[in-house]
Length: 233
Image 1: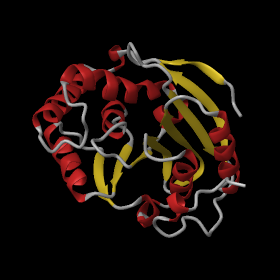
Image 2: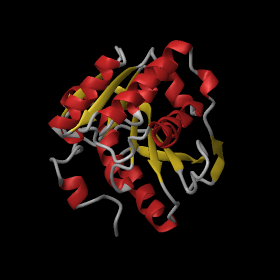
Image 3: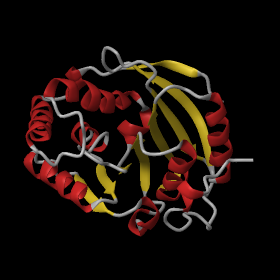
């Protein structure tokens, strides 16, 4: 398994004044909207734990070069919405299976005038339009890593990358994920610790590259990835 590389951070100076204004609008709506699907709504905490954590990934080469990004299980829009703001040349799909969350994502994109992001009401396994169409898939606290890999691999073009936000490293779980990746045409390339804000202990971003075509039997029908995850003995 890859060793842990240098820290990922975030410097707000990478954003223009217009982009910082969009971030402010996102944060204000997050705090004001009682239906926001996150427990972290206070502006100060959300800036650290949502915005900074999401934008730390700008240091990764696949993110800056991407033309199409898919955020799986987007929820309240992290990391997808901050990345859409920071990389305006990319088309960002916010893939979310719950309709009310999609409606919230649409309100945020409209209020902050984020023209390059759209909410997709679909499960990852059922999003046919996205199959083999994305340069990068991102996921943050979505599911066990073999499950995220199975969701992501069919949606990536050959040479595309999965960027998966996770917590403390767990070698046994990473071994299972590495086996699952091989079954899906993916290869684990790096792990970066994230120090986007004070107190961000044991935060990591894992990067997998799609090095071969994903077998035609994937994606399996909805629900099977979680029920019968790949990579086990």
